[in-house]
Length: 277
Image (tube, rainbow, N blue to C red):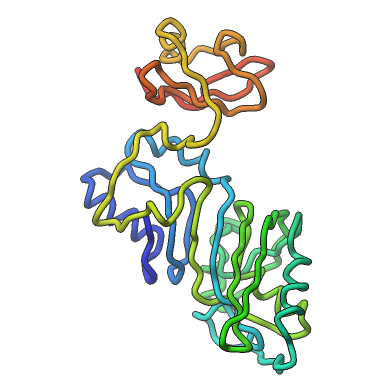
């Protein structure tokens, strides 16, 4: 789906349930209400595959506004600090952004959906509270900066691992430049191989075959004999299943349909999800 601004990810799921006439709809990764872009949904049995999509890398486009810090690290929050950063030039911003490329640690923002002691951080933040959060390892593969007509506003293209907070990147970039910054206009361009070019509105849902969940990822096609064992959820030798490496392995029938996903188990393979039978 191509999520609109102002919709929560839960709003999209609720709308999709109405359009499709089923309660069994889920998504593979939350987008902030103000953000737009790719939200991958699973419907029916495909909801069981969403956990394999959650960890896919993601690509975002956004604007970073230098000189102003906000309570939410984005344009929806209240201004909490201002800095004179009029002397900052594009080359300095590019150099500072390069310092965030690679394996880094991020402290989740208080407006995130992470749970601490059973409560989501954004719930605590709404009440004016704040709790200590442990830094988490993430990877930034790309952090490209482009100037705009406004000297204090920069376009950014970010490719990152799942779990990366782009709003935190924006705020940390401002700090690295000796001031502050916040995020605006966040759009998710892709989740793994799924991009916004093919995404559609929730009213125009076009369901894809379940095999598309593993688009571009190596799988195996099994004959009828092995497919029968797969349907019964049997643990198998890697040679019999015809797989190698670290998995998980999507298992397809001869007609190309996805029938299961297997994962490593003591030098053998066991079913993580069986979709037939």
